[in-house]
Figure (cartoon, rainbow, N blue to C red):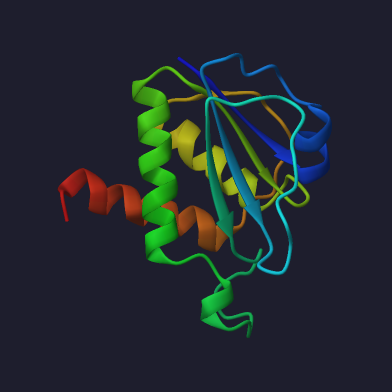
Length: 140
C-alpha cells in the first residue's frame, strides 16, 4: 500500500519528508492570501487548495473554509492515488492541522500506510472529507 505523509510548507520546499518516488501526488493546502511557491522534488501530480485552518463555529466566514467541492476534489485525488499506487505528500502551512486531517482520513478510509508524523487534525476538514467519501462512494 502506498504511504501518505503530512508536512509543513517549508518542509515541502526543502524536501524534508520521505522520498515519494516518481509515482507521487503532492496535495498543497495554503491560506487564501498566500502563494504556493516551488517545492524541491518533482511530483507526478499536484493538487492545490486554498482554505484556512478554521473550525465550525469559530466566527470565520464560510468562504474562507474548506467547502464540499474542495473536500470532494481532495477525496477524488486520494482515491486516484490509492488506485494508482501513488505515494502522497500533503502539506499545509504548519504541516499539522489541515494536512493532518487529510492524512488521518486517507489512512482510516482508504488504507494508506501512515508515516506516523505528529498531527493535530482540523476536525472540520476531517469531517468534510469523510462526508465527501460517503457522497462519492454512494454515487451522489
